[in-house]
Amino acid sequence: MSKKKGRVLYVDDEEINLINFRETLRDDFEIFTAGSGHAALALLEREGEMALVVSDQRMPGMSGIELLAMVRDLYPDTIRMIISAYTEINELIEAINKVEVYRYFVKPWQEDQLRLSIGNAVGSYALGQEIKEFVDEGRRQLAERRRNFEENKK
Amino acid sequence: MKRARLLFIDDEEINRDNFQQTFADEYEILLAASGEEALEIMAREDDLALILSDQRMPGLSGVEILARAREVVPQTERIMITGYADPDDIMAAINQGQVYNYILKPWASGELRIAIIQAVERYQLKKENRLLLSALGKKNAELEDLVRTRTQELKNLQSMLPICSYCRKIRDDKNAWHELEAYLRRHNDIFFTHGICPQCYENVMGELSDLGQGKKTDQK
Image 1 (cartoon, rainbow over the protein chains, first blue to last red):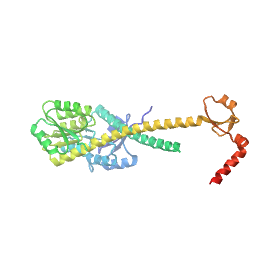
Image 2 (cartoon, chains in turn brown, cyan; image 1 turned 180 degrees about the vertical axis):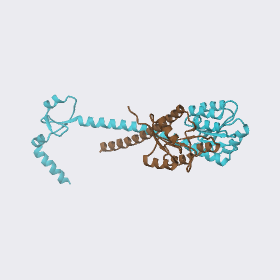
Image 3 (cartoon, rainbow over the protein chains, first blue to last red; image 1 turned 45 degrees about the vertical axis):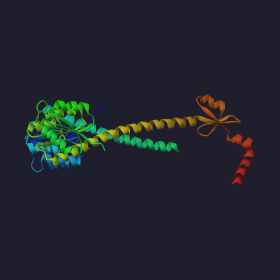
Image 4 (cartoon, one colour; image 1 turned 135 degrees about the horizontal axis):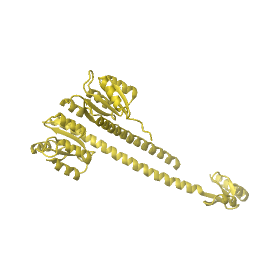
């Protein structure tokens, strides 16, 4: 069975990081990139929900936490991750309390760890979607059976 | 409604007392002074909504406890409370403990209360979801049974074919009348009910039927 690749959006203001990220992970995931928080939101609106949004924390304009807080409101099922060169305490705590990030990575990232975590995140998103579909399908079948049953009764 | 159960872990008694006094009215509170004690409680008690742990304690650290909790009681929400904010600890709380909230000591009871309310609410929503999911599955299975029974009943009913008491012709499911022997050669799994075919009805009961009809209309 050929499985669809998980859709991952990476946001960073440094283009070299975007290129690097894409090159590292393009075989395993469908990678989208954006150079700013605003560009990321526009891309999401255009391309639709992602399995995972990974963001740099410190960017001009919108910070990673600000972006992911909006992503959380707009696409609550999407998993959120931060990659940052800094480990400033307030940023870390906000990453938990405001954004509920799945993982917090420190730059420079370790390739295999990053790949593993992204794989887990995408898997966890897919599982969530499967459960949702299972429930929807169950509801649909239930409704249909009810209808059939009522018709048979006549 | 039953009060939600919280497990609070801190090696300092004054903190445990303080937590107990602040939240005892709203929640059922279990206390542990160490990670080891906490793990025992997790193994023994069910339906834990939330675990709150201090980070720095002798023995298991808060992160270690919460990482274990993630395996042992994955449905239970986790909050870290700590007096020292160390970046590595916080990163571990995210990456290993997958904590819902991170609170700095000394905690303001307002902030902590909101975090607890939200965490408990989330635990209950997820639990409700799981229950609904299994109820849905059960309901579906029940209906499937019902449909199966009903279908079998209909089949039985359909396979009871009317046979004419006079000419012994038989009516099929398309409402056509056949010679019995010819029909039986093609079908051998059928049941009969007795009736009368329209032709015999004409022939034998012709006048009587007219009378019968007349009588009925008269009575009306």
